[in-house]
Length: 219
Image (cartoon, rainbow, N blue to C red):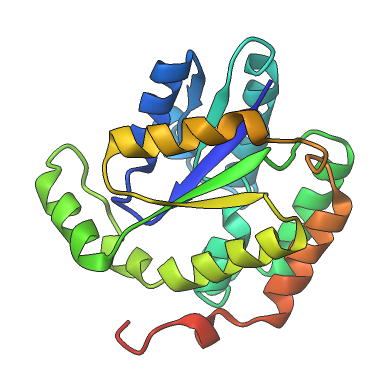
């Protein structure tokens, strides 16, 4: 069947769109790590990466009977940490990430979705949505605003390497998001799921393109 991943800035509508899309298409929604697992105490560096493996396993099991939407990219640790110059999470380097992830892709225990859908809207709209949603605290919202442009450039680079891997969706309303994504579902392919070429391209691009060159002076 089909596995997709929905990404975007905080308050762009990822979780709500993912859940609504699954409801409309009889799909299965896989929430972000924090919504499904509690961190161990003490937390070890690979714990969060291991949960991405768990999410991929769930996705491949559920896709037999349904569309699967993964809320937040399984490879997020790469571009998120890159967006902050690899200073987060005790300075985990891209080499550390690649050494953990690459064997898992090679063993087909972790893979790329058939399509990424990146929800985007302007900053005033994101702030308005955050203010209007009392159900979520959205810790780190201000910090996360700074990765919007680097994230966009990263996914553009992936899409340039494999045309059609990424679709950018203007997040106007949840219903419109669902409509736009649903029209793309028949056009997906999964020939790149376990592509080491794609993985190595991702690592190389992140290693050679500092995120700082894409950040606005306003942030």
